[in-house]
Length: 479
Image (tube, rainbow, N blue to C red):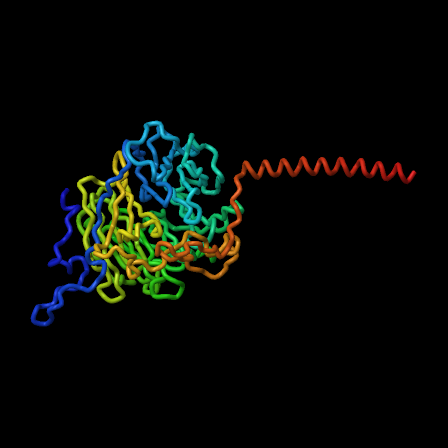
């Protein structure tokens, strides 16, 4: 219904958690000071059309993008396929796009590697997680051979997500009631945590040390994978539909590092957003514990996906089936969440994702760039702060994650201290060369490993032969 896209006028702000406007007599200042108060979202002129989306319903956000490509599940009878399309290929796309076709069952989740834009991980009903290497210019033919094939889950794999700080670490969740963490360099499982209920969403924290998982029993659980334990749990939303989660991020020990957002439903099927502090979670089996802020949004039916931008301290909510994306500013004082506005369109979205912050156009004061998946196309959406000046606006752009790892996989698995992702300046022309804290060892495919092994064995045979003939010559010389 049309109420899905309704957003309240400023006067009804308290409904969405803003402070009630004070009476004029008490204070003339009704409007909160904020440089993000006038952010607006606009569909870009360029878009991507004639796409054939998979009809498979999943719990993932439906689309992922980075500075080179975007990817989504393609309609292919039976098996799972992914389309990976270069951002430069705008307009109508051909029917016979080359696809990733290596899975034998539907693909339930997928994500780009934050430190290698040509690497993609996918999780499927075929019980496997596969890692793919995409050529720079995009796929030229169907890609069937993965770089890595990870096996170990006993039932379909619903989620897969890269660690935002450590190189080549991937977490997964499956219907076999486990959450696993994989080391891609060793191509093996590093940790496995039993989960009491089916996972409905899985997210790493900002430093890549903890995982948050919303579960079917209406609880949010915080896993410490390297300790193989559930560190905390809390009942978050009472409704039966899936809840989703997003961390605020922030360096270890800072206020922000303990905070997260959840979206879900009430027993009356109203959509809700909660803002939580992990330190205030219930002490006994998830009962008790209270949120810092809790808002009833609307009667919408689609699951809301939360996205947080730490640079601008803004929360975006995109619902599957909605035509709009709401955005809020988050402040340190109660009431914490301040509704700003929403991007609206008449076309419902099948999925939504944001590009990494370093991809925004700073000279047009763009603060976020989204990708809206529609039934036959993808519409990029640009969120901007209106400013008259053409100059770079320092106050809008704190340093953003640089896309290089802060720690190597083996070091992380060994239990090294958590580290925030390495950042770089957003100012054009400033040196964007950032040195990775740990040179990530190259991930080598099984095929290449077998080839290297075969070559090594040949070399050993040749050396053994040479050794025999030298022994024979030595014996002959002695006699």
